[in-house]
Length: 262
Image 1 (tube, rainbow, N blue to C red):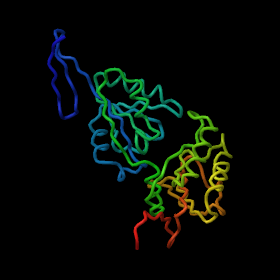
Image 2: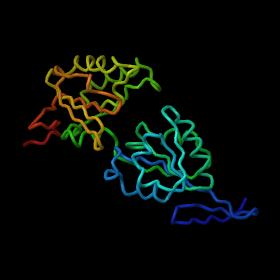
Image 3: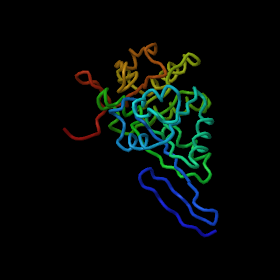
Image 4: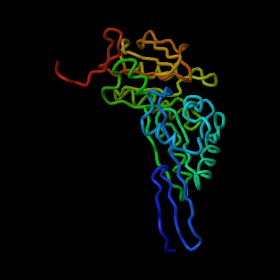
């Protein structure tokens, strides 16, 4: 079927003309809003949210962008409503400009993957954001200066045996490890068990940094070593960063050397 496309740049809408007339194709922005403070959001993320007709997201995350979404159509769900949120966002994006939001980066434990799995012919743009490990690292010092990895301790999507295997492999390979979703009421012992795995491969004075609510209201910072670590300070709003064999603490800052000769 022959036709003509027309792009309306102000909101990045696409129109398609065929024998039935003009058909709006809309757009879905998959937006990483960063750690939660508006001042740490990328300019592009702020722009597309402001230009959107509809905002879709987890109820608690909507509060982080409240000043930007006044007067817009809002679609929110509670915890574990990811499939419903994505399906609704894709439906609305047929003829509207929609933004579905994730904290941190939408492509790191966010909504980007699920949206791309579920999409058909919708117009999608993924807007990156500052992920939690980067946010936490910025207030701890420079813990991620060498090879590092992110591991989620949530077993909702991944069997716990596989999580422990990944922790062990990362520890043995001397990666700096950032633990996402580190501790909840439903799995209070996973973090301690994973720290015990790391202890098999790291010195007792290896630094561990815990940042709760990184770069947003209620931020808390705790520095430990493997020997002094207290998992009671950790919750689902925390990121745990475990140093590699070269990491150290200097003047209250967590440092991992890159390897420069100084």
